[in-house]
Structure formats: structure tokens, C-alpha cells
Length: 78
Length: 497
Image (cartoon, rainbow over all chains, first blue to last red; front, side, top):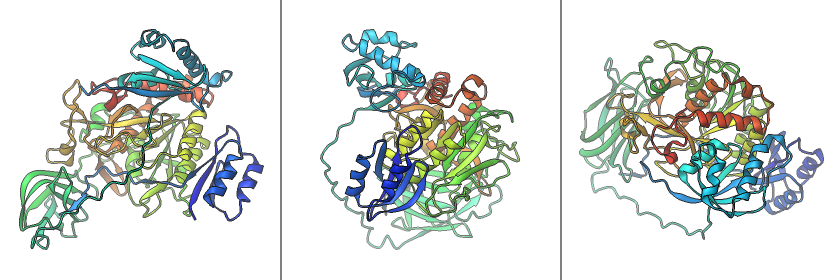
């Protein structure tokens, strides 16, 4: 199952009832959390629909930024 | 001088699509958007009066609301000037989406018959005493433009075998990257044969590299009172560094393990900002007086940092009271979580610097390309690295008003560039010693360090309430203090701080 970052975009603390609704999403699992975010394994459509129904929350797929490396690299071996 | 192109941009308030007309922290941005609305039908000439420098001219094409986002047309130079004069607004290029057509796979290069099996053995040694250098990465390019070649790593005897397609081969470029303690080596256009020996120059900590050329050695007090968060591969314990604390935000790892992930990158970045050593026995960063915190987002053995870890690190740095955040990372896809965390940081009075990226003049990568962060390109200076070092291969046009200045060939560039900093041939701290690295990753902490040094002299801004107005004031102070090196706005933004 894909992993998603669910983030509170409002100015204050996220409402506890919002967090409860997110954590109660069927077939989902909270992998990690911070005060303004949840890292969730969840069915994409169901999560997107739930997030749309709660004001000031956003959802995005978990993405990765590569290690910075300015060294010259080989694209094709000889 | 690089081309100054005109294109369309969207000018947005700090958050959302319309400015908050009652918030005192975004008052300046709101007034600016309202002013643009009032001249929307008049044209370029009338907008000139909106800017103190009267350089940033633009044409307002459309608007979603009188205090809302504006579609404008302006030159890349004007974008840079506008960022300096209105640091609270976001400026994003208009983009168009196209059908996703898959690229055709490229044909692979087949080794020449009988040639691939032949390997050429060479040795890498120290120029000082001739001792072999182990674990040096050696890359031989037979066709540099297409990046065709062979690579390997030296063994304990300093020997590496390269399969370049023959027992004797013309090499366009041979790069040697040492693990640490030496300048990296570059040899151009020669015939590679077995038995050749390649010496590398040991690092002399009193050498004037480009960082010290532009900034000299800072006093102990530089940056005092400013707290800086480094979001990176962690910071290793080092005699020249004092780390106040931090957090590892990699999911599944120990949150208290914010030391080096095994890469050394974050330790190098931290030294550029805050190293407290004294040459020739140590090295000194631009702001030794800052309070330094480490936020590790790259896992041990991992090749990437997740947007969750990065956004969490930004949040943590904000709640820990950091004034500045350094993000020498990028190249992943643009994402809402990181953008939202950076927006929250700016609204909490924190300024973020991000590296442009090292993809050989490609567009500025995310998150530097996000208008919320200040994007940094890599400045180089001829004469600040040894002949025969890899930095020789980084020299590229454009050259500045002083013809020794250039933007590193690897540096990404574009209208999102806000500033430039020394990023070619930088000596800094490394786990277990010292290393020379190149990249916008090095330029970014140079700007962060210089900013900390500046902010320490501006208590009215530093002690202001932690809100959007504070981070806007910081950005404005930095961008207006920067001086052009004559490289053009898409390459240097407002220039060097």
C-alpha cells in the first residue's frame, strides 16, 4: 500500500477531532507522526476523499530527495 | 552577460491566493498587491514607481482579486529585483502541463570487441610523501560530453583498474575524488596507460579557498545570538564544531541520533556556517558564534530523504527556536508537505535557504525553486584552487565584472535564484578530519553563515516577534545587502552577501 504525508496547513494546532478521523480511516495505518503531520499507509482514494472533507489539511505521496552529490558521474559505461 | 528573458509569473501573497487585509504581519505584501491592482490597466510605465530601486518593471496581465494573486510579465532581472524589494510575496513562473509522452530508450554502448576485458591499472598517491591513497573514486571519461567512461575505487595500495576499452586509451577527463584530506584531482586530454601514478595535493588548512577569499576569517563573535538549523545528513562530532542539539526525523531510526549518516555532507555544511577552529590546525566558518542544531533527514545507507522527514525537520527547527534553516538538498519532486512546512516556517519568522542543485545548468530544483525559500547558486573564483584539481573543470561562463569570478559549471540556474555564495573548492570539516567539496550544497551554507553574521548586527529584526513580518524583514535585509558580481540575475540573483 502506498504511503502518504497528511499535513495540517492551518495556523494553530491541528484539531484533535481531525486527527481522530484520520487515524480511524479503515484499512489504514499511521507509520509516524509529528505535531502537524501523519505518515500513513492508506487507500489513496479514501484518504484523498477524507482529507478533502476536513478543512486545512493536505495530502501528498511520500517522495524522496536524493543525496546531494556534485561529482561528475558516468551515464554509460565504456 | 547572460540573456535577460521575459516571461509570465504569478505574484502571490505569503499564503493562499488572497492577502489578509487585516493582518499586520502581511501588511506590506497586501499593499503591494493592491498597488498592482490599481495599475493593472495602465501598463509597465506606471509600475516603475512601485519599487524603491525603480528597476523592477512589470506588466500586470490579470488578477484574481484586488488583494489577490496577479499574473504578470517581467524579465528575469526584474524577478530578482522584485524579490529583494518585496520579500513577503511569492513569485512563481507560469507553467504549462503537457501530455506525458514516454522517452524512447537510448541505445546502450557496446564495448569494443576484445577491449572491454582489458583493464588499465593506475596508482593514486599523496604529492607530499608519495604514500598511496586508498578509497579514492577514480572516473575516466573517454567521451565527457556524453559521460561515457569507466570508474573504480583505489585499494589499500592506491591502485585502481579501469576498463576503458583498450590497453592504452585517450582520456578526455580523469577525475579522482579522495575520501578526505586531499584536494580532488583532474587531468585533461591524455593517454591512459598502466603504471601511471597520479598525485593529489594534501589540504592545507591555511589555504585561501574561495570561501576565505570572499569572506576572510570571521571573529569568534560573528553570528552570536542567531540559531541555525542544518537539515542534512547529520553532523558528526568534530573538534571545530559545537552542536547544541537536534533530531533525527528519519522514520524508524533513533530520534536522538542526529550525527553523521555516513556521508559527511552535513558535517561539511555545518563547518562552513559555524566551525570554530583556527588555521592551520583547524578551520573557521563564517559565523562561529551561532548556536548550531542538526536535523538529520537522510537515513543510514539511504539514498534519499522523504518529504515527511524533511517537513518534520523544518517543523522541529521552528519549534526549537531556529532563526535560519539551511537546506543543502533538493532534486526531488515538488510536494505540498515540504512547501507547507516551509510556509509555516516563514509565517513563524524563520528564513530558509536552499541549494539550487547541481545538474549542470538545469532549472533550479525543488525546494529552492519554491518562492518561500531563498535559492542559492554556486560562485567560483579562479586562483582559489590548485592547478590540477577537479575545480578546474568547474570553470564556465558567465564570468563576472571581475573576470576571475564565475558560476560553477555544475550549478543550476534560473529566475528563482536569489543569491550566490562560494561553492567551488570549499575546505570544511568532515568526519575524522577535513575535506574539499564543491556544490550549491556548499554555497547555501556560505549564504546562511553570512546571513547569521549580518542578523547578529540587526537586533531590531532578530528580536522582533516571530511572524511573517520578521522573516520578510530578514529576507529583505539579506537581499538588499547583497552585491552583484556582474554575473546576471538568473545566475546570481541579487549577488553575493
